[in-house]
Each structure stands twice: as C-alpha cells, then as structure tokens.
Image 1: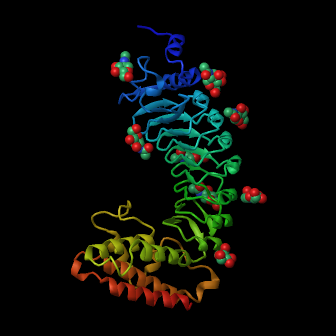
Image 2 (image 1 turned 60 degrees about the vertical axis):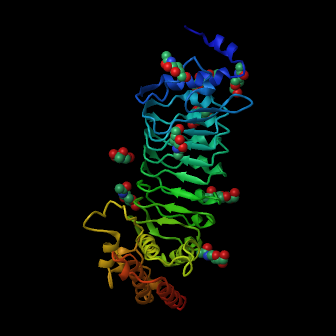
Length: 375
Ligand SMILES: *[C@@H]1O[C@H](CO)[C@@H](O)[C@H](O)[C@H]1NC(C)=O
Ligand SMILES: *[C@@H]1O[C@H](CO)[C@@H](O)[C@H](O)[C@H]1NC(C)=O
Ligand SMILES: *[C@@H]1O[C@H](CO)[C@@H](O)[C@H](O)[C@H]1NC(C)=O
Ligand SMILES: *[C@@H]1O[C@H](CO)[C@@H](O)[C@H](O)[C@H]1NC(C)=O
Ligand SMILES: *[C@@H]1O[C@H](CO)[C@@H](O)[C@H](O)[C@H]1NC(C)=O
Ligand SMILES: *[C@@H]1O[C@H](CO)[C@@H](O)[C@H](O)[C@H]1NC(C)=O
Ligand SMILES: *[C@@H]1O[C@H](CO)[C@@H](O)[C@H](O)[C@H]1NC(C)=O
Ligand SMILES: *[C@@H]1O[C@H](CO)[C@@H](O)[C@H](O)[C@H]1NC(C)=O
Ligand SMILES: CC(=O)N[C@H]1CO[C@H](CO)[C@@H](O)[C@@H]1O
C-alpha cells in the first residue's frame, strides 16, 4: 500500500512534517544499510518510533538521532539541519564520507555532536558556532583538514572537544583556554603545529588533556602546573622543550594515591599493590599497558625497569631537561623520578611475594615528596 506524506501527516497529526522529510532525506543519501539499522524507517510507523530516533514526549519533534556503530555508509544530508529540536546527533563508528554539512549550524538546540570514527573530509564547519548550546564536539578519527575554527570561540558551554586522529593544522587556538569548564581536550594525532597556549592554564576542571603527536614545539607553559584534576595528561611525541612535568605529576599522584586508593587503608592485598604499580608507571610513562609498543617481549613493567637506575628520563612522557633554569636541579629530580619508577616496578612484579607492601610504599612516597619540597 502506498501512503502519501499528506496521508501520513493526517494519520499522525502530532508529528512535524519537516522532521519527517529531513529523516527521509537523510535516509536517501545512505548507500549501505547492511545491518538493517534503517529497516524500520518506513510508513508503517510514525517516524518517532523508527530505530535510532527519539522524539520529545509532548511535541513529537526529533530530539535525538542515535545510530552509532550500525554499518551505515553514505553522505550526511544537509537536511539534518532542519531537525530544529535536535539535541544529540550520534553517528559515530559508521562509514559516512563527504563533508560535514554547514547546515548543522541551524541546530540551535544541539548539545552533542558525535561524528567520530567515520571518513569525513573537509573542514570543521565554522557555522557550528551557531549551535550555542553545544557541550560536546566529537570528531575523532576522520580525515578533517584545516584549523579549529576561530568562530567556535563563542561556544562557551563546550566542555569536551575531541578532534584526535584527523589532519588538522593551524595550531591550538588560544581561545580554547576561555572555555573555563573544559573537561576533555583530546587532539592527539594531528599535525597541528605551533606551541601550547598559556591560556590552557584556565582549565580548572580538566580531566583529560591529550595532545601527543601534534607537532607542537616551544615550552610547556608554567600555567599548566596548576592544573590538578588531570587524570590523563599526554604531550608525548612532540618537539616540546624545557619545563618540568613533575609539578603537574605531583598533584596527580596525590589524587591517585590519596583519593583513589585510600593509601595505607583499603589497599592491602598484593593484587591491589599490583594495579597501583601499573597505574603509577602509566602516569609516569604516559603510556598504557596496551600501547602499541608493548607486546609479548616488552611489557610496561619491563620497559620501566630497564630504565633504572639512570635512564629514567627516557621513560618519562615529556622531554624535561633543557631549561637552563632548572638544570642545576636535575640531579635531584632525576633521583626522585627514579625512586618513583622503582616503586612502580616493585609493585608490579609478577610474583606477589616480591611486591613492595603498601606501608613501605607510603613511607617511600613521603621521602620522595619531602625531597621534592626541598628542591
Ligand atoms: C514543523 O517545524 C518547522 C520548523 O520548526 C515549522 O516551520 C513548521 O511550521 C512545522 N510544521 C508543522 C506541520 O508543525
Ligand atoms: C517496516 O518497518 C517495520 C518495523 O517498524 C518492519 O517490521 C517491516 O518489515 C518494515 N517493512 C519494510 C517493507 O521494510
Ligand atoms: C530543509 O533543508 C534543505 C537543505 O538545507 C532546504 O533546502 C529546505 O528548504 C529546508 N526546509 C524544509 C522545510 O525542508
Ligand atoms: C554557513 O556559512 C556560510 C558562509 O561561510 C553561509 O553561506 C551559510 O549560509 C551558513 N549556513 C548556515 C546554516 O548558517
Ligand atoms: C594531510 O594533509 C596533507 C596536506 O594538507 C596531505 O598531504 C596528507 O596526505 C594528509 N594526510 C592524511 C592522512 O590525510
Ligand atoms: C577570552 O575571553 C576574554 C573575555 O571574554 C576576551 O577578552 C579574550 O579576548 C578571549 N581570549 C581569546 C584568546 O579569545
Ligand atoms: C611541524 O612544524 C614545523 C614548523 O614548526 C613544520 O615545518 C613541519 O612541516 C611540521 N611537520 C609536520 C609533519 O606537519
Ligand atoms: C598557580 O596558582 C597560584 C594560586 O592559585 C597562583 O598564585 C599562581 O600564580 C598560579 N601559577 C601560574 C603559573 O598560573
Ligand atoms: C556510547 C553510545 O552512545 N552507545 C550507544 C550506541 O548505540 C547503542 C544502540 O543504539 C546504544 O545501546 C549505546 O548506548
């Protein structure tokens, strides 16, 4: 039976024809729907009941389109910009190609834009600066080029910018430091270039700051020393010089040790000690045990233990020692780093009986912290 659009609107009078049309246009540019993600998108149901579509309860307008990991292939329709009540667009882990339509700029209620893990090309459209409610911009793992557009500096609600693994250039624009509630800034694996703006020190709530392999040069700004809520801080594989990550690591260690592990209290079993040791090495080395460089022959534990006692600098995430100002302190600092890594290595020994016990870990840490205070 063929039902015309007018008939459908008459049948489902509470729906909005513009939204319906937009969804049909979106579907019309999908060339591969092998997992059947859109097979429910037909006239036997109201579009609010189509898989992946969520509507508002009262007004029956599309508020979310969520079709992540559904094997869809095709282009993104400019008509998506007509879903004027849309708050979340989740299309990650599909095979969308072509550009990000600038019409998305019409989505004034959009909070989350997640187009991660597709094959999108072209620029990040400057028009998304009109999505004034945008909280999260997730465009990781595409082939986007050009810069982080200056226009988005007006998006003051942004707390999560994830643009890793693209081909973005033009540096880290200083205005991102103005998003003072920023929690996640993930730009790893882009040939961005330039230096790290001082303004990033404004990020009081930052959890993840990851900018490895971004062709960054210059020094790590001192303002970053004050960031104490980092759970992931990665600047490896750049041309950064000078500066001292210990100031950054100390508050991190503080948090990890004192808060997360309730040091000296709950953490008593050899298993706990092991996890702690691995975590410590992760923080110090800026590498995870599942990192590409680790395989059967080389574990994070082995990697770190090989660096003891006098090659610890090779293990630490960031290039630390070229700032004249701190050269005189390096012997002492290097010693502290070595001691810290030694704790991590000792905690993560294969045999539980060889692992350092928690009382001694606490004691060792107090020595190290004392020594550092006196530098
Ligand atoms: C649907 O929404 C659009 C945009 O908000 C509006 O212009 C149009 O009048 C609405 N149509 C109906 C039938 O409600
Ligand atoms: C239309 O969608 C319904 C589910 O909503 C499905 O059962 C049916 O097979 C679909 N019809 C066609 C022709 O795809
Ligand atoms: C929807 O979007 C398209 C493309 O951006 C546009 O041409 C059209 O006028 C818009 N409005 C409606 C009501 O479809
Ligand atoms: C997006 O910006 C271009 C110019 O850069 C403009 O022509 C277009 O109308 C804008 N579109 C929207 C949806 O704001
Ligand atoms: C990145 O862009 C440059 C030119 O801007 C190009 O030569 C290079 O092939 C691109 N790399 C990828 C992985 O797309
Ligand atoms: C940050 O915001 C302030 C105040 O709104 C403004 O004066 C300044 O130019 C902004 N900085 C950048 C780098 O955009
Ligand atoms: C890295 O940046 C330098 C300038 O600082 C530039 O000459 C070089 O081409 C960049 N390398 C890559 C791979 O983008
Ligand atoms: C770090 O914070 C302290 C106190 O909040 C402040 O006095 C100091 O200037 C800050 N340092 C930098 C480099 O921002
Ligand atoms: C992270 C996320 O949004 N995952 C969702 C992907 O889609 C499936 C099915 O719609 C959801 O169940 C997941 O929560």
